[in-house]
Amino acid sequence: MVTAKPTIRLAGSAAVGALETAPRPTILQFAEPDCVLTLLDILRHPEWKTALSNKVAAERTSEKRLRLYQPVHRLFHLVLVDAACTRPGEPRLDPKRVEKAGFVIRRVRKSALQGWMRQGETVLGWKDLPEDVTAAHRDDDPDPEIRRQRSLGKNRGLLARTSHPDPLQGLSESVHPLFAAPPDVCSARGKTFYYGMLPLTSDDMAPQASSPPFDDAFLQNRIPKGFVAAAAQSGPTALSRQDFLDMLRFLERDVGAFTDSKEGQELLKILETIPSAPGSAGTTLRAVLEKAYDEMDGVGEKGLRSLPSHWPALSAAQARAVRLAIKEALTARWRATAPRRRRFDGIGDTYVVCVFVRLKGENGCPCRTVWSAPSEVFEIVPWYESSGHPPVSVTLPALDKKALSRLKPNVAFTVPPSLRKTLEKLDMNKLLDGSHEEGTGSFGMICGFNIPIITLCAFIVLQIFLGLLHIVFFWLPFVRLCIPFPGSGSSGSDSEG
Image (cartoon, rainbow, N blue to C red; front, side, top):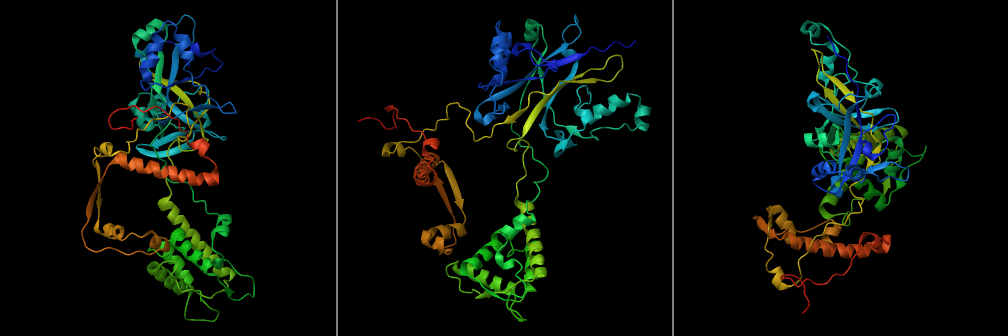
């Protein structure tokens, strides 16, 4: 005999407000690092409803959107649901009937909800979810194998012969665990609570960087004017020293034309087909640019003398070939250097939490998955914003000989011979010119430093630069707040007398 399946509702606790038509999980915010113990203590307290209501995340934007802080802000968030039967008179859900409980975080887009998906152990990143997966009364499981078994039953012959369509095409969605509250808590409240830590930061990365942003409008504004097609019937034009240096810097830094990259060499091959003067079969633009680059590499920009007095007018076909080669080179460098975005790196992205419980099968039937409605839409506060909590205090050493004498080196830098030679003859004026002298000898060094002293030096330099930049930005009242406090008189610190 097959028993009737009770309907399970996953909702935030009624303590935090009246249940809505589509009840949703509750997101709690704690300043305590041991937030789980704090939550359980609240649920054990006779006045638990009031205390729990005070922990509900409530900060919102001007558009009334919920804002959640990252752990770097020293604020922590928990997801809380009450798993209950909806039929009057039914007992609360027995945790022993639950095979697994968890939740997923989905990104909200105009077209669809997106899940953080995997193909086996391979991270695929954010992918659009089909409507039947995000529907209100869905029963799909995040685990593709569970979906397959439940759809096909447990008949091995049928499993071997049948291929049931999977809306997620065998992909799995990243799941975060939920834990049942201890039996004494559930008994005291007459409810089955499930809770879990809500991760708002992640090291998971998308498999690829975002698409290169090099469209025609970008290239038109970025490519040096010497590589732009000239007007019809125009001849060589005068080229200023600054324009030529800008061209060399662009080829070196942006495009990587003077490296051994395939795309850089392709660009140089195209420049080799363009004569530096009309009708000239000798010197090409490649030869002119490479000669100037080699000279600049030795004497610096100020010592550069290999400057062309005129620059040829490029035809439309030549300019098009150069532009395409530059675009290929920029795209290759973008793919090699552009950082991949982590899971929650999108500033302004919005998310929801969806909770599920997987109930054990009864009488030989497969397990069943029950989902909650999505949580309130929220965004993640960037790490650089303040949470309103007191700042972290860093105590600096006092500037007296007695205190400084106790600060021994606690970090060492191994300096190779080539770097030591450069540092030995370090001259700031020559560095600004792009040239420098090297010292002698073929030995390296091990240099020991004290980290608190390094911090003190950085603090002094910071004060200097803040004062200088304040002349431009007028930001000192916003970025620095200094208040006096009496000297402690403790050993190793400044004191009166």
